[in-house]
Length: 248
Image (cartoon, rainbow, N blue to C red):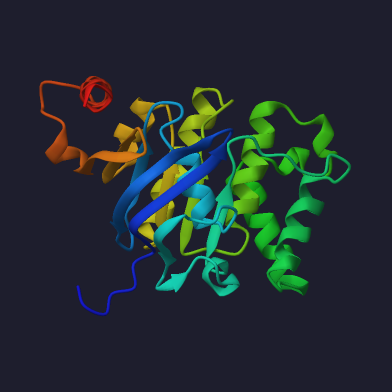
C-alpha cells in the first residue's frame, strides 16, 4: 500500500560476518513487511539468522546490503527505536535493583516521571504477576521471574511494536499462559508483536502469521491458516519447510 509505514520493513537485507580467509553470509537478501496489529512468529532452526535479524532491527548489527525500517524510519536512526519494546532471549539486568526499581529506571529512560510512571510500574507488576516480589532484588529471582520482569520492562513505554526473543523460555505452563494473554491483549490494542520462538505450539496458538527462516533466507511466510493444512500441525509443516530449505 502506497504511503503505508509498516512497523517492520526489510528490503533485500543481507548480513555477513568476516572469518579467516573470507566471510560467512548470515542473511541472504531477505525481504519482509509486517503490518500493524499483526502477531508474527519468526521461526527457524538454530543458526538460521533469526537473532541477527532482530539485532539489525535494534541497530546492533550493520547490514552489508539492503535496508531495514521501523515505522518508515531507517533502523540506524535513534528515532526509529522510540516506539518499540524488546525482550532478549536471555534477559540480563542489574541484580542489585528490585523489580520495581528496574521498571522505574526503564521508564525514566523514556522520559516518564511522577505519578504516570508509578501507575505504569504498578500496572505492569500486576500484569506479569510480580507484585509480591516487586521489592526483592532481581538477583533473587528465578529464571521464570526474570523472564516476566523482562517482559514488563519491554512494555514500560507502551510500545507500538514489541519484539520478543523466546518470550516463554524458562516459564512453566501457567507462565506461558500469562504471556499468551499479554500478547493477546497487545493485539486487541492494535499493537504489533514480532517474536522468535522454538515453542511451535505457543506460536500456533497466538500468531496471525509466521515467517520461516532457513539458511539466511525466507523459506515460507504467510498466515498460519493458509500455510498449515487442517490435517497437520505447525510443527510438522515447519519440519517439512526446514528439510526442503536445507536440501536446496
